[in-house]
Length: 293
Ligand code: AMP
Ligand code: MN
Ligand code: MN
Ligand code: MN
Image (cartoon, rainbow, N blue to C red; front, top):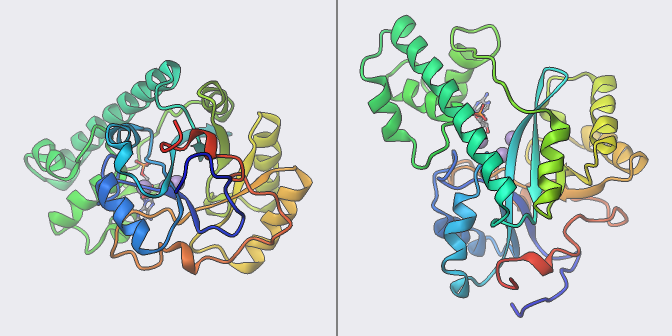
């Protein structure tokens, strides 16, 4: 792709993917090969609370052959709910963002320490720290790594059931997280030159009226876009989100939330399309793709 080519609406776009720098299983390079095979033309690598994957690609950007958007999925809090905000087209050299993500990483490590203690105490697992280090590939420790550890120990048959049995609200490994407020996170994304996108809005434990309030708050705090197309989103849910996007003048984003090649559903070709008249968040991203920097 030539530099500074404007991005067309019809291009195949996936703006939400994880590498092994957070809880995905592919390296950023493997993720790019995967994306190329799927004919994806614009890909955002949006790891949980880290841009290490994006930074690793910057070192070899002359070898890239698809448009990679630097991104990050940040864990935040809004009214005691855990909300994920994707920062798209961020500057990976922005010092404030780098410092902020360092703090997020520390919060995750402290939470992991609490979980290790609980696992050893309640579930009688030995050498938990060592076992956790074996499943974590970068600096970021996610609950999905803990779930994998529990699966490896034979305590659950798969990750989903490990969450159900141990990690979700009310279960033995529930830990309170201390994520920063949504508004603060949106500000950090803006300071790093990025745009803030509300990730997978239908997945939060809200009823319809609380979801509406969340989206209004997100817009008031300066948020620019929201995901309107992603795996698991049902047509009736998408219709509601489209209405809310229009009412709040939010741009559309879309992403597979890819984590692993064996997760067959995490494929951007299988999601429901976004109506053509809704403005896309990615239309003017070419200025900060890794190819054009
Ligand atoms: P964390 O951000 O560390 O709390 O981890 C959340 C991650 O765990 C999400 O990004 C998902 O990848 C994964 N996850 C959350 N809930 C479930 C679930 N019920 N089953 C499987 N994976 C889950
Ligand atoms: Mn994840
Ligand atoms: Mn998420
Ligand atoms: Mn995600």
